[in-house]
Length: 298
Image 1 (cartoon, helix red, strand yellow):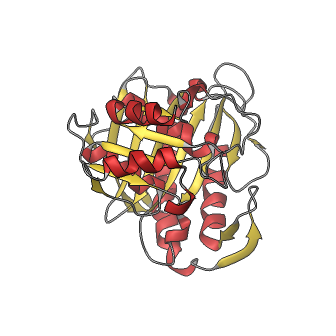
Image 2 (cartoon, rainbow, N blue to C red):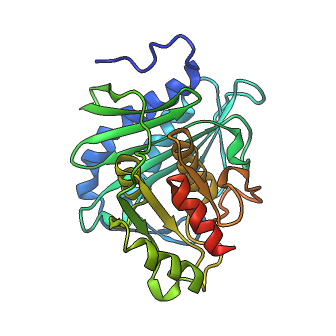
């Protein structure tokens, strides 16, 4: 096993955050079969929440707020930040989590994941304040992709709640130069005309890979090259994805892997948020494809 924290330059608090995320992954995965039902509650964005969402949020909240140096924990499932007692200012991080991305796939037993952003500033903050980001993918194998200033790596998470190992299987993930796949969210009738025109071009060039969980769809792009988008919609001009929990961390990962991300007008990491639950359109992938899309939307 390769120890991901063996690099003496790695920040111990940031690594401890990803240790905590990895440690919860087997327990979250094992608990999902019995939590495929509605919880009877709504999250801060007014969406119905499954029992699996709440369980993952509870586990991750307990694990991350226990990490020394974490000042606050912010979750898609919670209205406001939780004070983790790690202080403020330099050395105290805000950790933003989407506990169970793609939880609507739980009933159909398709891919889901957990998205993590580690910010060196209180939230809401821009993506430029991220110092690391990552995601866990609950696929046939439980993997974790971690991005920081040194690049992007992929790990396999193995074990159970009695002991978990993080094994690095790829030390320098990069988007392939020859893109192969695309995945676009939202109902096609709700797409704006300029985005629809772009999609018609792309479908002649790339293979469709869309599974309804952003983590899984972005992982396809990171593996094979291409573009993922959840666009602004006619009836939802701000899109669906949350800036702090989803768009910023994914944009950070893809940028570190050699790609880029935009909201259609500016880089995702430059978007100034008003609140922690702000939504934003997201277009992310190989630079040439994203630049073509931004030109089409201009």
